[in-house]
Image (cartoon, rainbow, N blue to C red; front, side, top):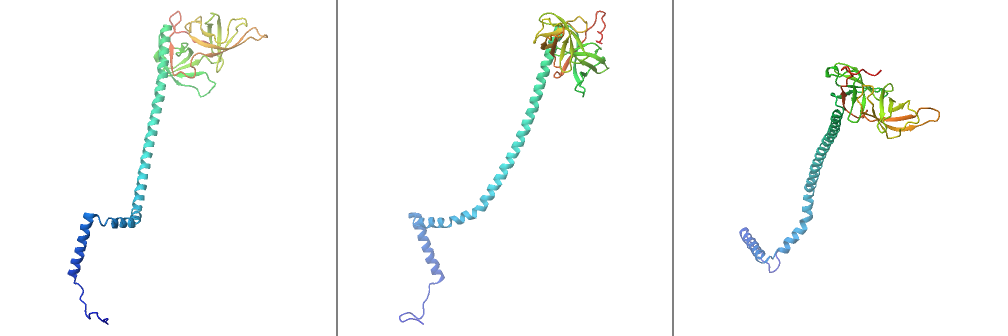
Length: 285
């Protein structure tokens, strides 16, 4: 029921009038905001109110992007580490090869100098195999009778006498080392010229039947004397490591170490020595 003084029927503005009214209001606000920045406070408030919602909406996408980036970086680091390990391994292999080549070149240089010093024809050989028995003092070389090698010929490396050829096959050779217990080499003390016999002692060597009053001392170098016409004169054989002069024996006990790289050298040289008749020197008994 209408109150006193209120019209019975009211007429509300039509849709067109409301549209025009709201359009005018919107245009007015736009002009005011554009010219005087009148609604800046309103925009700031709206942004502040909706900022947590924006963070909540963006959080899953940011997390997914971070996880994806981590996985990509982790995979890239794994690939880089694998490549670096492979490069390091190749470098180690190349370094080992270079070291081996350097040692082999050094051995070849020493052998070349030794060949010039002895004046004998020679055959360069490499070690084919060594016995499985650690107490055996023999080795096999990769050349034999087809290369002109004969039994009895001395075998040397760049540092001294290694041994003597004992058996020859067409394409391989057996060498008895100077450290073999049944092997003897006529030598002389380089410092004094005193002659002696040095025998193999397994891992080392020893001078036997040397009178106790003989002038010999640790550090002396023993070289081949050449009187047996098997080994050229002047080849380094052993270095004296210990001298004992017992009172209950007429002979000194002299321990030696071989000068040659018995268990180190890879490249050796067989000297083609000959006796006075022009035939290869016979092997030692």
